[in-house]
Length: 464
Image 1 (cartoon, one colour):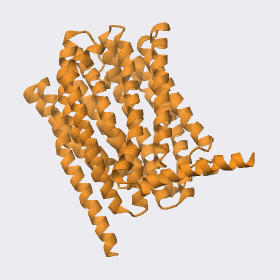
Image 2 (cartoon, helix red, strand yellow; image 1 turned 90 degrees about the vertical axis):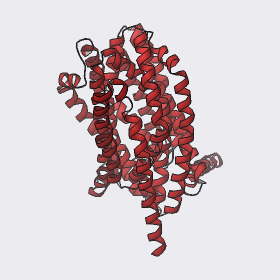
Image 3 (cartoon, helix red, strand yellow; image 1 turned 120 degrees about the vertical axis):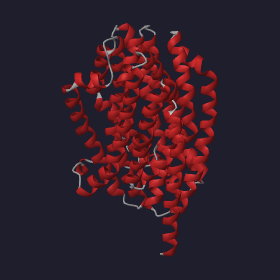
């Protein structure tokens, strides 16, 4: 009996050693693929998650309900923004603490991150429901879409603790190198959503409300699985009640990285709302077409997001360990890998755009507009991956100001002004090219900035 227990403990130790080896010594390309591919698999499933609601609601043959789900998406982005504040801030500090061999500080940060998740979800739910009508109007909902949008948004707000718990749980698991556990939570949530969507939408006749309920319950499954991993001792770190009270230092570190990360997502949400409000002028079916296109393109988006998410603990660990040379090697490998894969995804979306749009709507106008939008949006993929890699690296280093600066330039100085200018000058056909132009410029600027900073840190270390 004792021998079996010892063998089990040895296996757990070996698994934990492999996580540390992956972050500290594995070849850069293997490390990027090893940390990124499991997340991409999980995020691909998450992409299905986003499309599931769209697909099942499309079977109702009501394009206004499809539009409502798209109009409500910025609320999900707000929830994710707050989750980013907590998850990115805590994950960055955990990875740096592990790299500096400060395990107790990492455990304290983990526990505080979980407590903040509960607190902020309660604040979000109360505030959102209090101003529900005004929020739905601001999202761009009109006469035909207002009620559907209100129903979807209210349920998502009530279940925000589940959405935040699933999202933050994944980030915290990745911060210690437990990528496969993070991926499993995503997959479980998606499977639950796929099963529950037809039950609530059709069997219970709840239509768009049923889609929202299925989304919340799917995220609840992911949250519970993350908690199970921590409680069962399968992770490097375990939360503890004695660590629930935060120190000023930990809160400062979390919010220094987390607040800019939250603002980045909020700025993206603002840009999304501006985009939707401009699109509404061309008809509510245009919003439907854009929503379908954007959710299909999310298959490609999750490739670069997966690599960026896997990149963050790699960079944070090595920054904490002072290994700037390895950080630069990982950046170069990551940019090459993500750009090459995204070029392949871009070709697939371009060729099969009408077929893919046609899966979700048989309305000729929706298919035509959606195809046009998709063939413009696919052009962002080879560029935006590099931008995401550099942003995640700055977050991992605790240099959130640089990450936030990239987002401000990207969304407010380039994208939104280009959106307004191209819409005014060329109409709808112009505005859909605002993002590809923005991402091309930002790829060159962000990668150059990070390379200069890493080379400077490396040279300073040689001198000292």
